[in-house]
Length: 309
Image 1: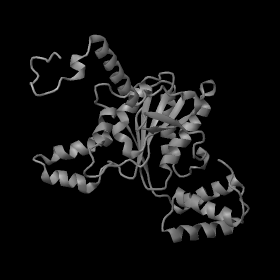
Image 2: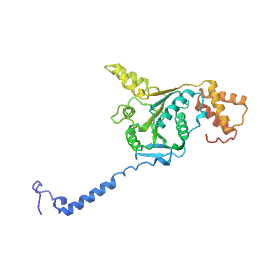
Image 3: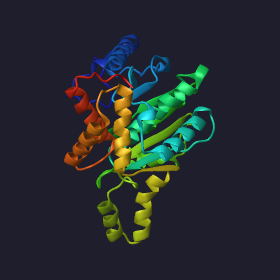
Image 4: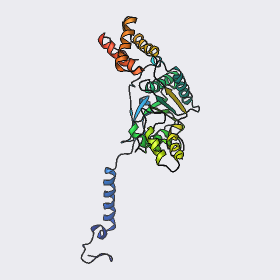
């Protein structure tokens, strides 16, 4: 048997080296076929017509359709009239192909930040008339932010639709560097944000990063000002900041009454006021979330089925 010149005398010949060209070609084809079987299938282009809302699943680089979005009617969101009007106008401009800003909804918990995003999406789609369904809502989870560039690539390839990419409860911890992926997508990356995509995020923090994290950066940096600029610049890339603040007692009662009227819950006005205030006192706070939790308790006690908003 012929031995290659660089093969030691005591090493057996490799079959692939001694085989005929035809045999080697067949062997390489079998290896290539085996590797193709092991490789994950290429992601198929998403069918955007199946739903108005999707959830991004980075593991398979796919958009999972959401047939029924959990949301309330915009008319039931009380006490946030100013921010509602601003977000609605911004979204309407975007849906019409006009310039619009990324939006950060920040502030008190339970005051309807995520509910407003979902309600505005539904309201604008309903107002589009013949173009209804062209505005899509894509939810990306906080822990998947690093895969945002992959999502942008997919949405960029669907120019017939316009997309609100929505991240609820967005914030970052001290050891988390994934916020840099978000910064690049918002503004500053070489590709930038696709023309048919806008980003909406909610957070309890105005600057998305904990205060002690920024103070630690200030203490350890050669130039403290530059360290703070690095952290604050993330929020600055949202052109629209909408603040949500704790509601007054009157606003809380208006929320409760709005739900009662909408769901036709039979209860005396004085009893409703008394029970609603007692509920808020036991919870130690007043908010839209607390109002809705009270309504669920009230409807359950009165054996009333809550209809869809």
